[in-house]
Image (cartoon, rainbow over all chains, first blue to last red):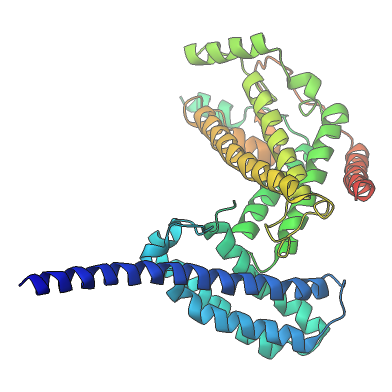
Amino acid sequence: MKTLQILALVGLTAGVSVGAAFAADALGERQTILKGFGDETRPVVAMMKGEAPFDLAKVKATLATYAEGAAKLPGLFPDNSRTGKTEASPKIWDEKTKFDGIFAKLKTDSETASAAITDQASFKANFPKVLGNCKACHDDYRVKK
Amino acid sequence: MTDATVSSSAAPQVLAWDGPTRLFKWALVATVVSAWVSNKYGAGNVAWHVWNGYAVLVLVVFRLLWGLVGGSTARFAGFLRAPLATIRYGLDLLRGREAHYLGHNPLGGWMVMVLLGLAAVMGLSGLFNADTDRMIIEGPLSAKLSDAAVSLAHRIHHQAFDLLLIAIVLHLAAVAFHSVVKKERLAPAMVTGRKPARDYADMAAATPGSIGLAIGCLVAAGLIVWGGIWIAR
């Protein structure tokens, strides 16, 4: 009987720790992805402004990064990852479906843009539509620190 | 009864708002609405929001100039009253014995200034505003600023918007009050420019401003806004 209690306690502790570790992992992983978005976007924005030469391969790689990250991000905001060192607004968990919808749109918009962009003109016409998803999400769900 | 109806429908109308004043007013309404909509729903076309901001600044500067040289009811000297006179008008209004104005009443005159002031703050703070990463939307004067300064501009831009919403609600409530309770049709007058003749406290009829001067004010406003941005860059 005693063994069973100890086992239950150990199991519970392990469960809670794994849950906490998962929350921390999710937080770290989503920040790595979003930080990566930012780092990859910077040189592309420079192309938009004409500060850097147009590089089709780099643009397509960035769009692929968005699509890949956008597929993972909805799963990286578990309910227990609200607190900690995060700029995530509590509104995310009140409107999780709407929030996830922005990532779904980012993914399809990135894929559509990747197919549509063939030269500098189509890049300038299509890339801002993708960036619009960043703005839409940051406006509503990112708390400025 | 029939006589009264006939005479009221045939009541002489007088000019209250000249063309440039009305055109300005509705252009500002359209631009502010467009700026709000483009920010909320047009994230993929941030240039539109930025251009709305320039347009707001040009319109506000135009109105400031027009308030000096425009039609008689558009001039600041004509409708801005001292604080005490404004409070007295407010008290008279509550007692239901207020004077009637062809142009802005004393409270409405100050509301014009509040709305113009908030629109100006929105436009000006927008020039220095940008998103956190400075990658999605950037005001033309934000590039040289520190992150802290951009962040300050961001907060001002947002708080001014909240205040602007409150001011707009108050403005609409006042117009509704005058229309429903006082039976003064203020909104149609801002479209047609005309109001029924009566014993107005400010003037019997408005003198329209000159169209040439209006065009001059608009050109000057454009030069002031673009010139100012160009110098500040």
